[in-house]
Amino acid sequence: MISKDKTQKRFLILVLFCCLPLIVSAVHQGYRIFQIHQESVRTEKKVEKLKKENAALAEEKQNLGDLKYIEKVARDEHNMVGKNEIPLFMVKNNQGSK
Image (cartoon, rainbow, N blue to C red; front, side, top):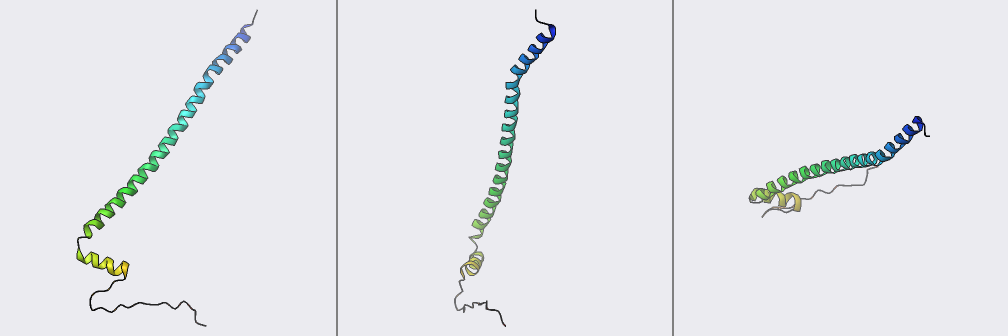
């Protein structure tokens, strides 16, 4: 006849054996939730960055109707000069004096 201690040990082993897949599954699901949360945070940051970029582009689009803004961009970014103006370019001397 099987003793009470052996029966309890077998029952405990059986319970642990049955619970092990549940524990593994719970840990896996917890890790997956963590990954999804991290991805969500990254996506939210990207959305905020794109919203700021969109606002800047909307502002620039609005400014493109202003002739003074167009003139400023033409002068600053494209080195253009107005009518009857003489272009002046500054040249740096990269050679050191001795």
